[in-house]
Image 1 (cartoon, helix red, strand yellow):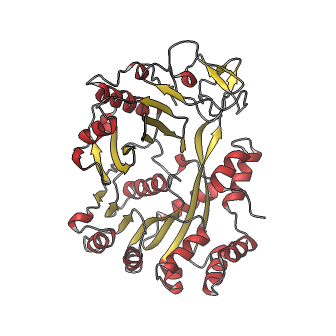
Image 2: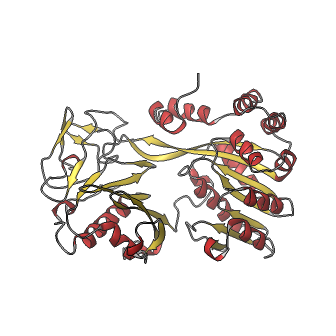
Image 3: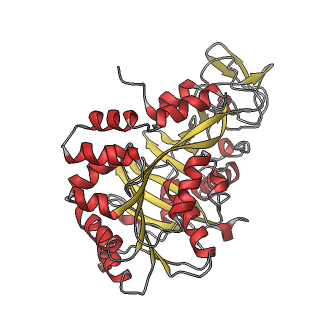
Length: 438
């Protein structure tokens, strides 16, 4: 993670005709250089709140003062080829912007109307992932071994579950890379929304609902393309679930994702989509539930001194006080000494009077996955217990208890082992998994 240098931003004049152009250039460059996955521009009555999502968490905001006719979100809409006169309705588009990392990066803009004007969020998608193999993901060895085994399957479905931002797509891409590199070669196709990385030796396609290319329709066509391995970005409705299981039961290896909290909830979700329990049991090979936990900074070890920095005003007459590398944190205030602005996080981790240069005061740097992996092929006691409980119509809590009694290791147990090893802390586990019931 690099410092987000925005010292030039607060010098911009909202009345300048180049205000929006310069602000967008600075913000996009800062987001790319810091490794942010998302850049938020939230309109307020006096300007825009600027936030960066780094390591899965929205960092402390900047405030970009407005007052002129130039709107940074409108500028982003121009870069994305979106009609600016239709800002009163949601829109999406690809941002075209020159940057030294342009060949390895694509940006997607989402615009949503609010009472203060259009809100913009830019998602940054890297084409070349650092996590190109299963071993590089950082999963526990038993889960990694199981994922390697699933790549050798010839049919059935492999589902990854978890909320948005839990690393599902990264894991799925690592699996496809392994399959594409294997010999003999197999015919691999994807149906994505959107395509997040370009994978060699794989035919990737992107949804176009306006042209009739929905997930279910595309999947039904893909099975007639002499495909052996299919990736469907998400099972989001009964029609897509039905098409995915039809493919998995007719000689195709199908990979997809589900928005569900764990393996038990994934099975319940599929039944709610209208998939009969016997089809769930026979069509699925493996389900993996995954989360990402932030790791404690190895430089400051998460030692906290001081309190939450204050939101800084950027542009106009108010300096970006909370984001200076030279800020002196005292009590509840961050006093500026020096001009240079940088991003600070939820709390200040400092050595002497300065924030940790590696984590920028967030206490965390980088993330590590935790996963629960269950087979439903009749060779896993945990999978058998979950299917038996699902067949009886048990509640989710009863299904989870049955899995633990059968010897399963859930996400919370995985997280606890990382806390014990000082890789992360309990506060981060609470943030990602919530507090333990009871």
